[in-house]
Length: 426
Image 1 (cartoon, helix red, strand yellow):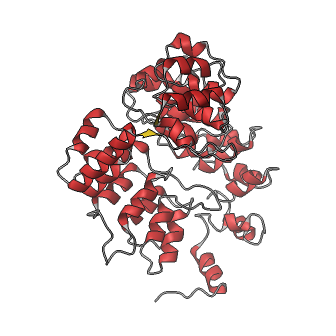
Image 2: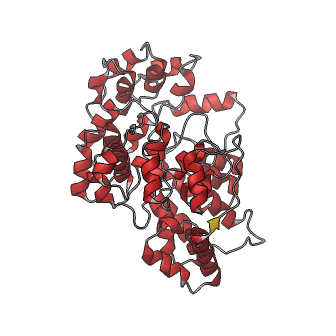
Image 3: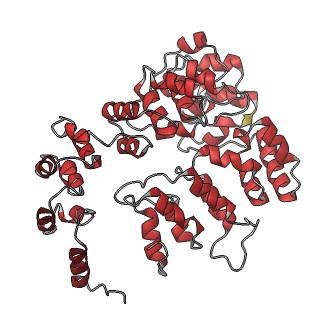
């Protein structure tokens, strides 16, 4: 299927959340945009997000192409457009984007220049002096954007207008004061301005006492604050329903270091540290013992070498979005999970599907679990006896899941495909 002549088949495999990430990663060499779009997660799959691609797949994708600055006639897509889409793609680790600043291909360095705000001073200087004129031009444009003072502002209270300007761009002092006063402007401009690195200290102090909790939250995350100043702000710690947004925090030049974040009394800053690339083992272990569940979960999701016991503990304690993704992490335990067959938490009972030594009686018992998610998950366990497995194919609820069971006899698979009119090869 990975080599099927029909791009629709390859595209379906690329987005399938049940296909192994290493296998899907082989499609990085595909030349059809729809396949790559599905592979890199530009489109949602109805059954949920697929497992993250390994870093090596992205690296192979970048290494295999010349990355011209414009589309070539023999290409079915504009490569720079594809890169732009990847820049907005949540599945690609941010550290890989920033690493492209040192890539030997100029097209990729040009792409990295668009993220100049998150690059080190050394990488920014290198791009500004790059031997390729297009890379230099892109880096200069990004650098000029960083010092351009915006004066034309959309003040319509009904619009989101220029929130992006107030969140990180340079604006005049008078404009900032107008926003801080809430004078004839959208309220959300204040929360955007609260995180602006160019905001003067006296205005930071005013917003730290703002009546809007969103504004105070944003001020509390400013890197230049001391721990005493941060603690004096009445900020909130976000709920643990969705931790994905935290992973997009960039470590900008001059901002608090990863170690500084990890030592902060603010749980959100420690969550930032948990997502940072290349955290040292000693600091990783400190984060794994953090009092905040969000910090522990994010450390498990983003750091290498996390012990299996910590991964399982994070899975047991976290009830938010993408909980199941913790089981994808290297080292997540599999043996012995059958002991959770009677756990009151349905998600813990689902873990039995990962245990290759789960007794057949335990697995069959879970096919009648009161929770649908448990029943459908365990229909995929190879310990289901063959006669019971074949019988499940006629079950409206469990049949589609039983059809994915690796223990399903090949002759039964052929019979299903024959009935569907799928021709046999050869």
